[in-house]
Structure formats: C-alpha cells, structure tokens
Length: 489
Ligand code: BGP
Image (cartoon, rainbow, N blue to C red; front, top):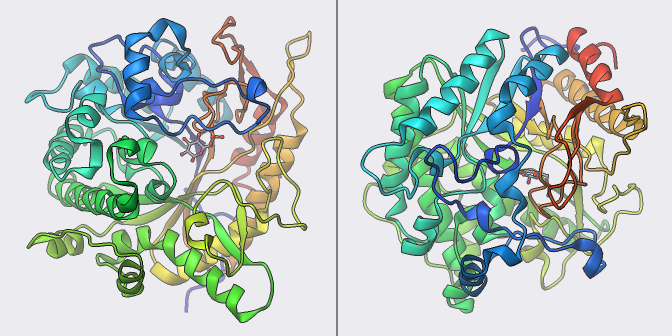
C-alpha cells in the first residue's frame, strides 16, 4: 500500500500559467501568421449589459467583415500584455515569487505562419528559445502547451480547422519541429488545451466556422474534430517518445464536476452522464481507446465518427503520461432535455445555493477541486497536474501603486488547502500553476479588466495604459506559499 502523504511532495511544481494568444501581443511581428484568436473581436460587455460577453465564436461572415474593416474593431488578443517584448522582466518577476514552473503556450502561427509551409519560421523558433533560456537562468521548468485555443487562420479558411483530417499531418510536422528544437529545454508538454471545450466553442477549440456546417450535424462535427485532435495528440506522444524519451506529455480538460440537483435517481444518473461527457476526453487520451459508454451516446444522437484503419492503434500507442486539468467551478445538473448540452459549459442555468459567485458569476467551489482530483486519480491512476485555477476579479490600483487583493489570496488558499487534502487522500499530484499569474487578456471575454494575476499590468480593456507591472499583495503571499512548499497558507 502507498504510504500516507501529508503535505506537498518534494519537487512539487509550483508556478503560474498563461497562453500565447493572451499575453504575447506582437501579432504581426517576427514573421508570425494570423491566428484564429487574432479575430476574437472585443464586444463591450458594459454596452450589452452582460458581464460574461463571450467572444468565443466567430462566423464566416464575421471573419470576412473583420478582415475587410479591421479598423472598426478592437482585437485585444493581438496586443496581449506585450510579453513578446517584456518576457525578461516578467520571468524575472516569476522567479522572484520562486516559481518552479511556468506554463506557456507556443503559437502555431509563429512557427508555421499558415500551417502549410514546408519549413518553420526561424524567427518564431528563436523567440521561444530566448524565453526558455530565460526560464533556465532562474531554474524554472517550462510547461508547454502546443495548442492553446489558436491556430493559423489559414487552416480555418482552407480546411475549416479540425473538421478536416488534413490537419493531422500538419500538426505532426509542427510537433516534431518543436520537439527537435526544444528537447534539451522543455521536459513537460501538453498537447491541446482543454479539449472538452470543443463541446462549447468549435471556433476557439478547433478553428471551425460553425455557420459553414450543417446545424443538424453540429455534434457529429464536434466529435469528428475531436477524433482528429485525439489522433494528432497521440501522434505527438509517439513523436515525443522517439525524439525525447525523458519528456512527459499530458492531455488536458477543463474539469467541471457536475453535481446532481437532488437525490432523485434520475438526477444522479444525469450527473454521472454529464461527467462522462467531459471525462470522455481524458478517457481516450489516458486509456488509449474510446470508452464503451460513448457507443450509446453516439447512437442516440445519430453521430457517426469516421475512423480509418490504424486509428485505434495510434490511440493505443499515444497514451499520455499525466492528466492536466484546469479547475474553476462545479456545476449542478438534473434530468432535463438539454442536460447533455450543458456538460462542460461555463454557463449553467442551475445555481448551487451553497456556493458564492465570482464577479463574473462563476461558482467558487474549492471542495469540488478535491472531489475532481480524487475521481480522476481513481479512474486513471497516473499523475495529475492542476495547470489552471484562479479568480478573475476587478482590481484597484491605489495611488501608491498597491493592489490589495485579499479576495484572490482567499480563493487560492482554499484551493491549495483542498489539493493538500487530495494528496492525503492518495492523489499523485505533480504541480499547480495558477491561471494568469500575470494579468492578461481574458480568453472568454477578451477583457483586460478580468484580472487573475499576482502581477498587475497597467492596461485597460481598450488597450490603453503604460503596461507597467506592479506586485499585488497576493504576489508576496504566493512567494511564501512556494517557499514553504504549501505549509504557510
Ligand atoms: C480557460 C482557458 C484559459 C483562460 C481561463 C479563464 O478555459 O484555458 O485560456 O483564459 O479559462 O477564462 P477567462 O479568461 O474567460 O476568464
């Protein structure tokens, strides 16, 4: 029997997480091509009266309009927080907090501007070399996501993104270039960010313009695209094993635990099914095959996923080393017509009266994190990584340059406490990278004012500001947490 583990293990990977399209900026520098995220236009949430005004989906008409009349729109993911030019200062601040790891993603379009080139863009590769070398200077291990909610827009225009099988060899080429180039600098990899979010946004998750597909076939396309990504991910695992046998490659989902609204067996059954729809993703990637429960779901929903000979072998050979999750909230579900559609969605119509909400109406549930970790570990018995967790909140910069964000400290403290409990419950947890360790552009709403960081960045939703970095109160708190390996909370 495994020994009782109290406290965080030695070598626990504390740190923070980001994504290229939310921090880098410099969208048209260094030979980078345009990405899908470069066309996420800002829609003023205050004008529409909605706090959560998702800029997740883009239609073919919108894309054409954005290209034609660019000057009429704001595209915050094009400017990010200028990490491209300020990475040295930012990584130095992470090092000051004592980060052991820094999660970032590589922009596919920086390496292959359209995804179709035979040779990679050297300037793009050189940029990440500099970033990894700066991390190495401080003893920070990079944790690299290969595809975090963006891809060359050319692949959307030519193939309608991952709806097409043609993307698999293109991703394989990209993966091999990354592994050959960075094998001595990067040990920890994640293939796709939050793959289960394909259920929510085909554009953000898979580069698909939804209006170009038959609405009746939306679910089928969702699972077909996911199948292509599963294969691409498995092939990347295979390539990693060949090129850099020491590397650890993980999969990732947005873990949203669904609770049943009542003790009615029908509601309990629905909760189980909703959880299955999310866990389907790591089920395939960690077990190397489609789980049996999906056969009925596919039949009931008239979904036919086209598979080719050899696909099953590829999935089998491409099992991941660990399962990474982002964790922000739990959900409540009940037996109702649209219950399956709500699985994995950020928006749940059923409120949990026992939980408080963030300023963006996200339910705050630290115990849900412990439940998630215990369930996932029971299911896969391979290491887990919490690679995103945090509180999006409005911060106030005082006149003397301070940010008193005790609400953020409180949020993270409670989640760290629950991770500690989960470790005691037997979970093998590799690390914890809080989301948006430095303020960045929101993925869902493209806002700057939804801040997650320990480091404040002086910039507003419209891209105005000095971009000066300030340490928040949480900065010093997290430094202590890391220094004490999670003992001082
Ligand atoms: C996850 C994404 C991140 C991130 C985070 C917070 O789904 O992987 O990219 O931004 O959610 O979401 P938001 O920025 O919408 O608050």
